[in-house]
Image (tube, rainbow, N blue to C red; front, side):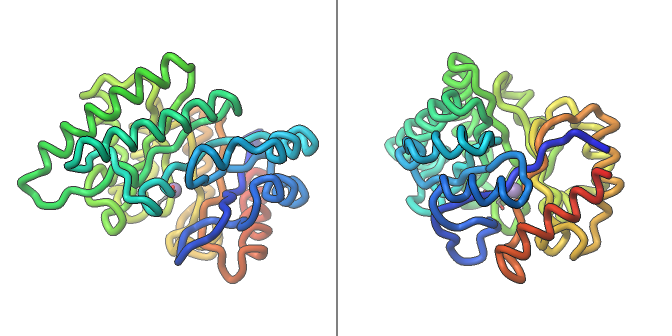
Length: 272
Ligand code: LER
Ligand code: MN
């Protein structure tokens, strides 16, 4: 029986086919996650202002729950902010808003996720300059995170959503080359199934950087509904000494309620 903690993804509004499981106020999400038996919530806010909520703080206290991580993808999806935008003012605004997420993460003692806010590469020729811009933006965030003792986690995302830094080795290489200290890596089994040559080997080779995990099956449904071998994945993570959180980021199907309940029962079964 493992002692890994579970976390439920919470967002104000699920737009399109976004892989989140609770839709509503963050405080209601905390109460709901607790009632289902989750240990934590992973909150995807559109701005850090949404996190300045006395109701959220009191729900966390009352339910004895904590926030595992703050997602930042809404900044990119809702407002187009990106760490590699050609316009320096847009990059600066992305960094400014991410620093506010770091401030919130310091208060909640949680991680900050960096995913699609990396932006995309418009064409092959601009790859080196985009990587350079990303390195510069990330270094500024890394220094701020270090000063505030917050860890950020950078997520490899599959090629159909982001067209660079799609696998674990590329992320690890990027972190090393830019000498980023307070930015680790997180993994998402759905993306790994598309991008990794060998999921087990990728976890073993990159375990020193892995600080957070999303579990979704090959079709992005909850574990058990696709063809991923979660026994092997969990065993491999445990063999590396991973003792962080496993978070429920999967499609809200067949309904968000069923996905939330079934994700947890599948994962608890694996834990046992
Ligand atoms: C994006 O596909 C993803 O996996 C998320 O973690 C972003 O919020
Ligand atoms: Mn993910």
